[in-house]
Length: 452
View (cartoon, rainbow, N blue to C red):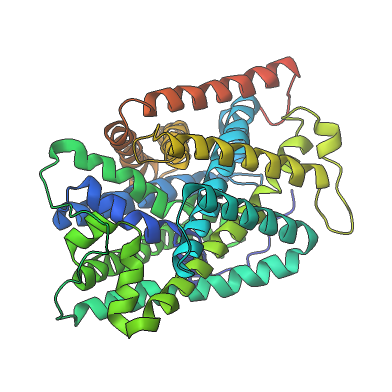
């Protein structure tokens, strides 16, 4: 096996983790976190810290598999090499049919929401979804037709999305004005005691930190990766935590707890107006919208490649067709169409769940993220086993980190249960069934890749 060239250092590894993790979630989940805690700012800070710890221990644990792996490709490859090809097939189906398309659909929809707010248009669910469909179609098309443009757009938005987060955080430190009045037609919602239901705030926090898993795919290309990656995977999430807390507390300082509880996503627009006057709302919302579009671009950029990756391993139906690439573009047109079609499907499902409030204020992507943490537990257990076998000699890396990662995943699962006790178990069962079908498909097709 040819050894990977090690051309990344600690700085690059940390910046990649920060750039991937900081996305759109914090902009439209901050109000959900505060609502879930009943307006208790202290509990809001606590769930951010818990979320960061879940990411830190989980990412450090998976970095051990990445450093030992002979394959590239991230978590699917870890399942294939350290668990079994059939388990990899099951996990791959979950990512293909649920995880990526639901997140892409939700972030596209959020782009629609902020576009309507920015241009002061009627903020109806139908228009939100229609605009989300437009953004989704545009970015899927752009990333298939021009990978260079998609990559450049991603780099630009990575820088721009830090401006409103850090800016609001800094402004909040020196803010002395009183909270603004509620918008016309918005009813006052006051702080309340929510009991243990505050654990439900872990779900939007998990969404806000989501994306860290991708960083483990570059482990073998990092210099002295066994030492460097655990450091990067600790420092990176801590930087994300600091930025998120700064934004969260800054937003509260500028508009107040009751405004966020009552007006929800409109809080960011109001913060812009409070900071910069009549044009400040549009200035700040423009940065936020560009940031969210960057997330849609980044997710679609990665997602259109997933069907090809699975098809090349004969892990899905029509593999022979989907695994045929357009050599000029380096991508499979059928893989791109598969990813696009699945995302359209989930956008329709999302519209249905929102139109009739099936998920009680939540969304389909949150359930996918919760279930993904459940699936990571299997890999954490494998690291524990490698620690007991002395393949991993370091006690912290081979025992403490995977145990804490498992505790973190179970905590997020518990938070998901509190956030939606009726439909969360149903959707988790559905996700589990998709994994079962993926496993059975591997058995039926005699999937012999990797090792059993």
